[in-house]
Image 1 (cartoon, helix red, strand yellow):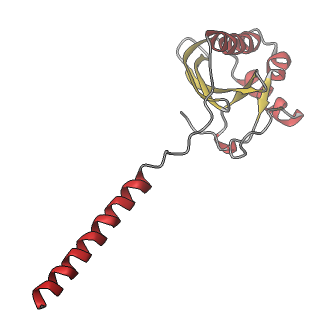
Image 2 (cartoon, rainbow, N blue to C red):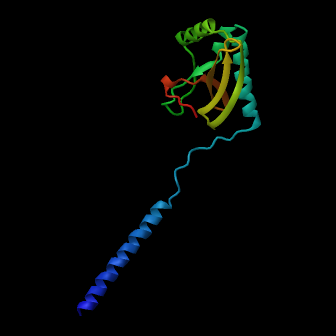
Image 3 (spheres, rainbow, N blue to C red):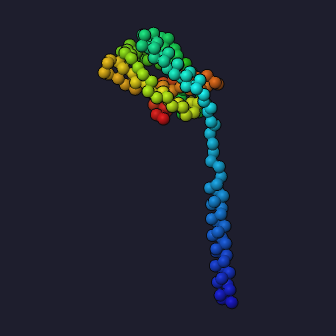
Length: 160
């Protein structure tokens, strides 16, 4: 009788362990939450490249007001935010930077598309033949149109 009772308890424990393992498998098989997928075409790449080239050419030709008027800003910490044109203070700040460090030449090094609000264009900007830096643009697709933002770590932007 004792053996039957022991076997019954052992069988009960095994059933419980098996049931727990199956529950874990079911929980693990739930599909992960998916984010919306941005569909891109060659036209998107061309549009973003043209935006950056137009901005950089205007800046290189010392047409600072026109160049800066092309820029928008958004806070990376706020999802689905509409890009806003720069305010007068931000525009003046960037114009001053252009005056202090005029662009000698530039080249687009890399374009990465990730999501509508999280993309990156890396440019090498030369101030002289040898002095250079990297600028990171953040093209944002909002309501089907591309807007050009600068990456700003103060606004929560991070490199992709």
